[in-house]
Amino acid sequence: LRIAILASGRGSNFAALLAARERGELPVDFVLVASDKADAPVLRLAQSAGVPTTVLDPRQYAERRAYDVALFDRIGASKPDLLVLAGFMRIIDGDALKPWAGRMINIHPSLLPKYRGLHTHRRALKAGDLEHGASVHYVTAELDGGPVIAQITFPIEADDDENTLAARLLPMEHQLLPAVVELIAAGRLALSEEGIRLDGQIL
Ligand code: GRF
Image (tube, rainbow, N blue to C red; front, side):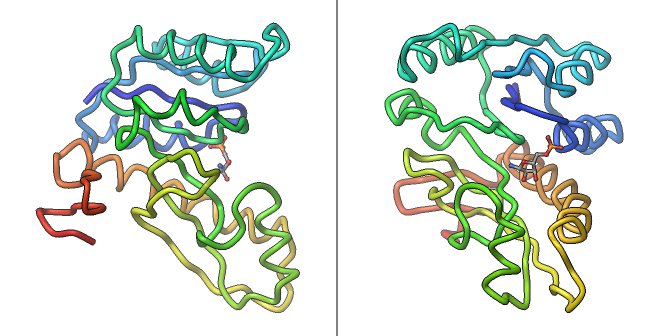
């Protein structure tokens, strides 16, 4: 399975995928790491792992649509089977996503459908939630709104703040994302007309 990563920041989820591959758990090739930020640490990580990188600066494009066309042209050129959004902090135009339907996943730090978008930890605390978590979902035109594949959940404690929640959640994300990619790489998980199919069963 050929994988392209889209990421804007630190890249710890990409690092978790690289580590799973190192352990022999992920039969995949990372063909590209694409970023909208020239100084994103994820790019250095990719370079040190020998993964090609590309940076497209949105400020050089007048419109979102033009940016997305250029971005997905570049991504398409590396012929990936699967796109993984791992901390990609831009909204992508629906038309650009269409050709990738069922072949693009995202990891989001909330128990979707709760808290699409930003500041998920803060919003979970403010709502008085008793639990928090992360979701991996197929990407559709609706922001953080595509079919949810898998989630991890943990209890929120009375003395939690945004930082403690983020710190507890991140290592769980690093389990969840490689596990989902492993299922896709093994051909066990796919999006069909009827919904998400795992081992031949609709979830
Ligand atoms: C993660 O919390 C992920 O869920 C969110 O952005 C963060 C990315 O972290 N979408 P990293 O760049 O993978 O370290």
